[in-house]
Amino acid sequence: MTPTKTANHRVNGRVTVFDYNAKKLEKFTSPDLSQYGPLKQTATVTWIDIDGPRQSQLIESLSKNFGLHPLVLEDLANRAPRAKVEDYGNYIHLVINMIGYDEKRSAIIPEQVNIVFFPNLILSCQEGREGDVFGSLRQRLENPSSRLRQLGADYLFYSLIDAVADHYFAILENVGEKIDWLEEELIKNPSPKALNDLRKIKREVIYLRKSIWPLREILGSLERRDSSLIKKSTWFYFRDVYNHTVQIIDTIETYRDIISGMLEVYLSGISNRLNEIMKVLTVISTIFIPLTFIAGVYGMNFRYMPELDEIWGYPLALMIMLLTALGLILFFKRRRWF
Image (cartoon, rainbow, N blue to C red; front, side, top):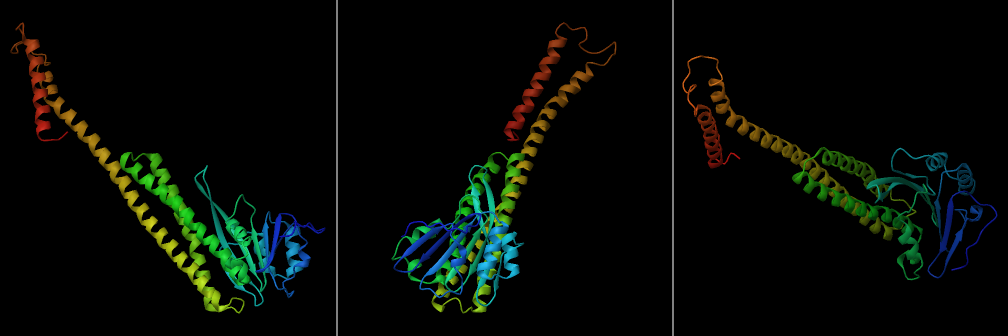
């Protein structure tokens, strides 16, 4: 690998160029993009990895040097409404969702990636957030015997898509762990906080489904178009990514069913707790009903009543109340009402 080169005409954002074939690998940081025209015939594959803010200077440089369609430049400058793929004849433009996960906030971080695929050149534009999923590809490029170094730009195009798709599995693993923890929490303590966590996870799963489902359509669309830019031998790899997306979507659907069941568990837990509370209150009320009756009878203001003139009348009434309460408690315990 040659030392990092720095050109005079730079663009804002982190721009890294990997120029490689089976025999060599060159890496350039902050290069002059004018020397990487898409129509230049070279014996190498060029990967221009742009990671940074969408700034007008960068968009202008891409427009000038690569002749991109105005709609492509618009998607590069602004977040596209949804993932998509467009075939412009001599190149393919792909917009896919790359999702990260913030461990501190336990939240999903959305990001969009634009990939422009020329016969011997790949442009990948990220939004410039911390970390990405292409680190493993950069490491694989260091190995001369790797398949990435041996095959062409279409394989790199597949590898970029596959890296994004594989990262979905890591996100799903985090979501699955949260679902398992929350399921136990809802059974032990169905609190309002647990319900808020359940709603949050439900929104995350819905967002994942909206992000991943278009990728399945995109891969199917690429196969139907049978682009001349992709070799037949590489289509097998794209079908493998397609199978991964199907597996991911099936997992998401399973999570949705589990979350729906968890909501029913929460409602059932709340209902059971309410029933337990009502049962305790009913038992207490039932015990005090006869006691209130006895106290009410002897609280009537009549002159002539039994035991009013007895010395032990008051203790006797209290003893009757106590025995009545104990008798009801023993009766309820025998019936296993509490």
